[in-house]
Length: 246
Image (cartoon, rainbow, N blue to C red; front, top):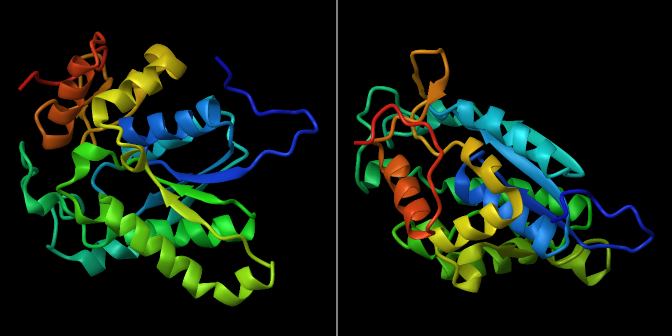
């Protein structure tokens, strides 16, 4: 198991990976760094989400993975722009326990991936990655046809820089491209990180304060439930602390 960057003279390709601090993105980042051997750069967004605790977790795992650099980008103005369109940024809305379109944040991944690509082209990275897997098919901006289209569009936006060699072409990549589902991704992450993976943050809420002052996953939102299902399907003992097993 290798969680340190290569210090030899070997030149390794770089990847920018969007991490939220959640199970999927952390496992994806670990896979890129360890199994695929990329020099890893990670980026996290503060976009007005209710689950601000995930940003702290993203910082923690960027250190664990020994990333070259980790950026937290403040785009909290998006909360006002989104208004009442979704439950993840609107504190007044109920967070559903099963999939509902209220948890789809309008073109969120377009915004995230575009900013990440600007960084990738600035550091000559060739991959821009995020944690979408095959179980995310319900989200339009997690589908492989979306990734292909956005890859083409982003490279078209820098066509002259690419043709003159000033920029590298990038590829938008996620585990879904390789046909990996959530439980398979969990297995990959667990193989690399072990029990540390349970310190990731999946909950759509900002956590429930436990009796000892610890911050717990709510255990009943759609994301918490999906986390439980994936860990169970992976055949791994779930060591996440939930406020309820709902």
